[in-house]
Length: 610
Ligand code: BG6
Image (cartoon, rainbow, N blue to C red; front, side, top):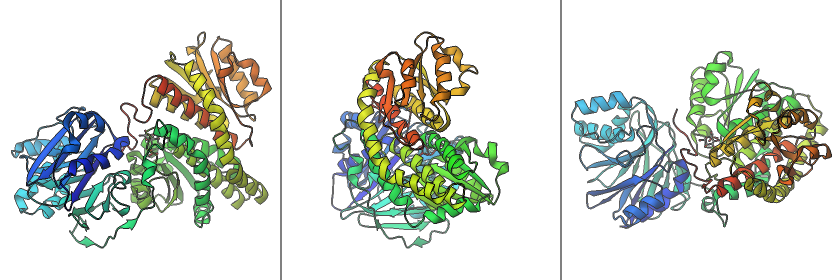
């Protein structure tokens, strides 16, 4: 969605440089526009415009802004087009109050009308501006900044977080009401931000916050209060072990390629988590539930589809999987106190998932198990239990290593649950878990090494492709959808991911000579997939195959680069590997098309809006 960063320094006059350095780490949260409000001697210097941090910094000299405190905001547009006037931060009525938000103010229209009718000067179409005016309004009533900020949340409905200050007061205040917020205490400064990567350049001393809490930042301290009654909470900084370098490219041209190459290590790290002391607790949550629901969005949803096949095969249980946004309408009435909702979200903040989490808790519809990557996220705090995906920060907007981690988590849980409920015998479970732990890191590396050049060569033949399908069958159902999503996200091509046996029921009509259709398959299913391949080739379509090498598939390949061959592995390991060539294909095609795969247009890494 958006990223806010507020900093108060002790002796520095270089607030612009600090804010740009820290807030630029949030680029993955939004890059439609960026702005900085810097305060020096009671004067607020506000500079903002459309574009990325680098572009606007070059244009307006953000890094050169002087002052000892300030707020920066990177925007992903929801309310109000991405224009200069709608960029954040905003002023209140005069150039006294300054602030910025992340999230959605659902009562934007009504509240803006109320403010205008009471004489407020509202300049933009952006809902974030109303947060500043709400503080302005209550300051008029109370004459006290703390009370003004505390009361301001009464007027605002939705899910949001904001930082706000007053030109003539040294503190910066922040509020967490449904969107992510984290703070840090450094030697010479304090910081509040939407996400950890922008805190780490300053400090690893981190304060995680919960909804309904507010902060007061001074140059050497961060105090936490409960908004409801203004009571101060005893919240001490804790040392975060997330490596700040994780947010650097490490020599790769893009974060996406770096994160694909981190996947072998992700296997080792997530297996370490899964074999840790909480594993039995998670398995018991599954065993105690009468119904199991897997809820996710985007790439997390595609991984969840792969998960449902593992739970069927290895544990013999049906998992109902659904998109966050449809879940309540599709399954809400079938949930009860014996249900288990597995909420999958790498950011742990996706609003569609938060909505499900809120409803399950409010209606007492059973337990919740979060599967998340961002420690300190709302999903982490609010779930009954959570499984960390142990990927390190994923900066690139298109998910890769977090999808990979999720696939492994589902495969492992399914095997352990199958052993627990007797669906598979312990030796089979041990053997499979052993493959995940001992073979998959090597096989992942081999797949990256082998299919990188194949994907690069294939991408070169697809520069003119604007429309295609990516089909999967059985375990590669979710894999194909993920490959299609990657192509959509970062190549701006229409690529539909669907089940290959379904293709003949209508979509086949799209196929003409050379129309490309990608098939992700495994040796266990290729006997069936060959039928679907023939249906495309009978209409002279171009068939591209992803999977292990099989002699019987050779006749269906017209050009050698149309076969992305992955190393041989167990039939239940192969679906995990099959996604890698599709990740690499989308990456190389994106770069060949002159697109930055890390920052695809219109998208954001974390969507905290409905
Ligand atoms: C989208 C991202 O905004 O959210 C996708 O661009 C991601 O990459 C999806 O898969 C879901 O995100 P999360 O954090 O809930 O897994």
